[in-house]
Amino acid sequence: MHEMECRVLSIQSHVVRGYVGNKSASFPLQVLGFEVDSINSVQFSNHTGYAHWRGQVLTADELHVLYEGIKLNNVNHYDYVLTGYTRDTSFLEMVVDIVQELKRANPNLVYVCDPVLGDHGSMYVPQNLYPVYKNKVVPVADIITPNQFEAELLTGKNISTEKDAVEVMDLLHKMGPDTVVITSSDLPSRLGDRFLVSLGSQRIVMPDGTRSTQRIRIEVPKVDAVFVGTGDLFAAMLLAWTHHYPTDLKTACEKTFSVMHHVIQRTISYAHEVAGPGRRPSPAQLELRMVQSKADIEDPAIVMEATIL
Image 1 (cartoon, rainbow, N blue to C red):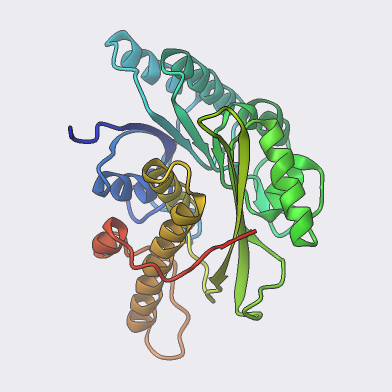
Image 2 (spheres, rainbow, N blue to C red):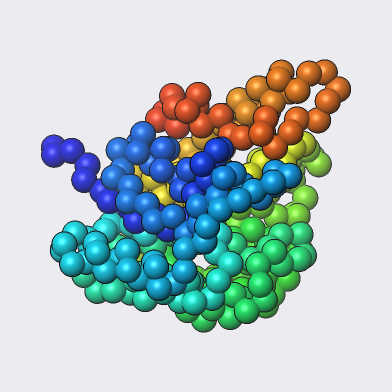
């Protein structure tokens, strides 16, 4: 068998120090054998959770210029596109144009989108991004990873039961994506209040042409700390593991959530160790222990089992 030649165009933030956006996605994807072409939507000194940050923002026109260069050399063939946090509507619309063009060149291209809008009932991107995600981005996406708030916002339906969540995921399927993972929800966990519930749904066309939907639920241990870059790592790992298990969302999610667990545990242990007893770790101390987690990324011990609904 020839070696995997799978190329990802990842359009995300870049930080000099730490792990967020492309810094969170590139290394783990490369470790798993993907070629990653990065376009840095911003270049900051560090993530914005620190006391200070400085840097530059890429405009929609500058994004277009970079893509034109790739295209002029006729190397604009991609298997995946990956995007995350964006603050600018014109930039987001340019991303959609690029995705559509790449899909015309390769109809099998898979667009993995984390539709970052907000969390816990409030938006942390400008309001005018919402209609662009809803009407332009989600329809061209194949895999999306909203949290509960984002899933509710995109569908206009609230989630208070598992049944609601399934209906919301079905509505999201109707909007375009065949794979939907609600990364975190407020639904009560069967394992108690120290766990949160994530849900997934995947539409598959069977060899005989019939459609089936696999839905899963997974209980994830809560962590008492604020991490940055975890959503970006999650989307990248879901891309990787759905590539290896294209019709088995259960296994793909178990692998993805297990990687997250190992990276977060390693990070929290380290942060508490360097902060010292009784002291809250700083943003710098809570940067994901990415390089140190290489073995877990390559072959995660499965520590979470998904339930098929």
